[in-house]
Amino acid sequence: MDRMRVVGGKTLRGEVRASGAKNSALKMLFASLLAEGRHEFSNVPDLKDVDSSFALLESLNCKARREGDRVIIDVAAPGNFEAHYDLVRKMRASILCLGPLLAKYGQAQVSLPGGCAIGSRPINLHLEGMKALGAEIELKNGYVHASVPGGRLQGGQILFEFATVGGTENVMMAATLANGTTYIENAAKEPEIVDLANYLNKMGAKISGAGTSIIRVDGVKSLNASQHRVIPDRIEAGTLLLAGAIAGGDVTVTDCVPDDLDALLAKLREAGHEIHAGPNQVRIKSSGGARCVDITTAPHPGFPTDLQAQFMSLMCVSEGVSVISETVFENRFMHVTELLRLGADITPKTRVAVVRGKPGGLEGAPVMATDLRASACLVLAGLAARGETVVNRIYHLDRGYEKLENKLSSLGAAVERF
Image 1 (cartoon, rainbow, N blue to C red):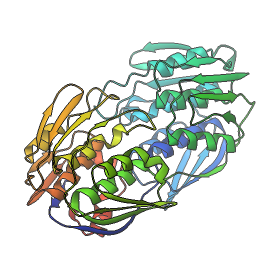
Image 2 (cartoon, one colour):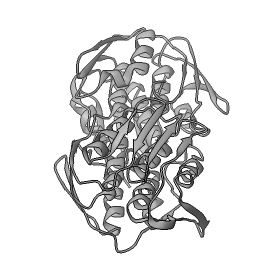
Image 3 (spheres, one colour):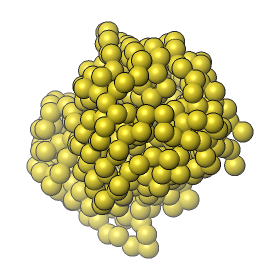
Image 4 (cartoon, helix red, strand yellow):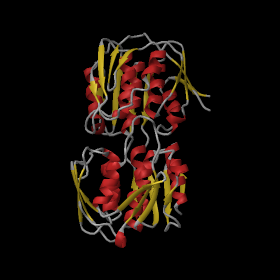
């Protein structure tokens, strides 16, 4: 099993490019099930989760191949409509094949999903949305058995109890081929949802309001395969900026969308880091003396929960005290115990962690990654720690970061996989 060795104390300088957005690419791959034919996507990151998506699509009679950052999906009618447990357990996003299969073929059997152990993340809102569109749902033997009487979903009005990203995406895809108009209220507003809606509209869907709290979908009779470039990954871009902050120096992240990083950039400025945002890049200059600030995670456009762990690493080596509140997932402080092994001073509660910053106070040690973002958090902490940090179980990292060690090394970090 691969591990990552990080030797701290290296100043980072230079430019590094953000890859395509994992959380956008995965949804588009499943959206391809809505239309038979040849779908082409560019700027697709080379990740374990993308490979898992290929495997699931191929089990549904699709053909998937990669040519650099370009992915081609040839979609044909499935021989079966089952997303098997052995495939779905590896990646929670697999549940997003439910909406397209129901909309296009009127049936689906999808295993209950797996993924990182950062919280329960129930799929009940996905299922309630499908029921509102006329689907019949039964949970049996660990699978969602779904069917559509009459073979075609019906437009409806869905009011989500809270803004669910996956639920919004699943219902939006399902509604594209429903009879009539669907309104999704209290919809999630993430940039990845806008990107998915843009691709669905290229396919011939009629979606308006993506990126706002109310999305309207006017159902159409059929969709066509198309082409699309995936947006940059705001979480990877944010992680690279935080690496620049925690290791000091002067780092520019290119091929990113600064507007998608507003919440993070505001907190970095508040902490005393120098930020310069251009049309498609962000530069961070950090020369020491940064201070702790408080953050509270929230759905977009709030502070992303997917950057909370990495930001906590920065607070561990900043001046003062930081209160970090996690409102999105109930179990997203598993990285705290590993940061303590490096010498961090953190008092965790159920949803709040108090971090007492210790500039220069971290020391290298062996640590273990517990989930995707915790992996990045520990690598970043290693950049600031004295001596050598070895991060175990980095297969989590490979689910969401494309060759992170190469990108950090290009900036001058002493990072290697072994």
